[in-house]
Image (cartoon, rainbow, N blue to C red; front, top):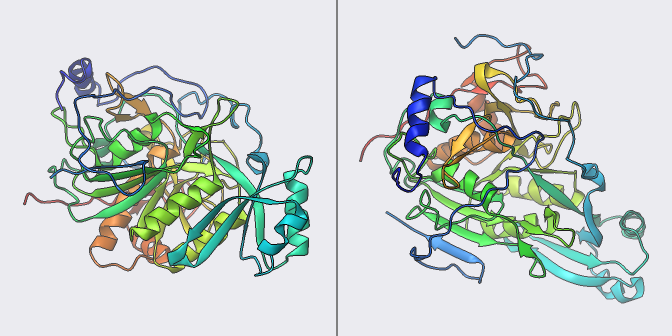
Length: 444
């Protein structure tokens, strides 16, 4: 990639070299996903398509102790979710998800006036989920309560929605922020991992020719959401090295990218539990052992059950803790014990202002002002979304070297490679501390 593809890139890089690689950019208040679009490149051909019409494949060859009270100086706007309902109240209207149901359940659906919208079968985990449409006038909460009472062995919940955990602010290059050395383009060759996020533009220059397999799981009755966030996370994970010194964390690795976000009737960007489960099924079927979730939502019983099975089947799931500014209340999937939860830090190891806090936080990683080459001049991102990938690639590297894919083994290993911040030992702000592991790659 050259400065011709990003006209302002050269001047940006020059300024950054003079101010410790921290450049000022426009600051957007609130923990929201940024809404720029990646450029389209009509002359780029997709190498091959995976099964399904929504799948594309592009293949190419003074660190001191910080107190928990220290906050990022960045203005994060108000806490919360920008006018959205509380996570537990944010779900698809007129729908429920049911799994672990008895054999008689499906035969009773007509009498219950319930219709099957979709069946989600995760065969390798031995799980089948029914997405059901409720009769007119019945509320989701009432339906969940009635079905759970009538079928106590079943797992019943709403089809909860999720947020993309990102915002925008100042510019820092991901490897430089983490203290990682520059790597060759094949760093990570042979390593495989997945992500469940928004749409990804596989034709983007930073991803063109990279080893990425992409599939969208948005509802066919809705349009897919913008590819800005998903493309940003994908480039952060495996983006090809650029002349200005930027590169993704593991540019030689293979990424399986699944999109679960779409535009609803109110023109909102939403992703729901059903889409998450379908995306996870695809990753499981492709034998992906490490998965990055840069999303946050409510505790969902069906999702919790499936993720527990995924962990037992040998998967390491990494998730951002969320950007709602919550204290002591978890966001999910990061809040599940089966998931490794990652928070975000900014300059001078201060905690990101809107990062959720709680007992579920495992580790901290850089997540403020992370520059990604999306848009005509590139963009910066803030949020726990941008921190989770640092931990994801470390998990994938360990698994590729023969370590068993188990979150507890990974947690114990990573704890030995952290800078303890905040209160001594694990705390609710930084977890075990800032990850300081440095992946090594050699020229082949």
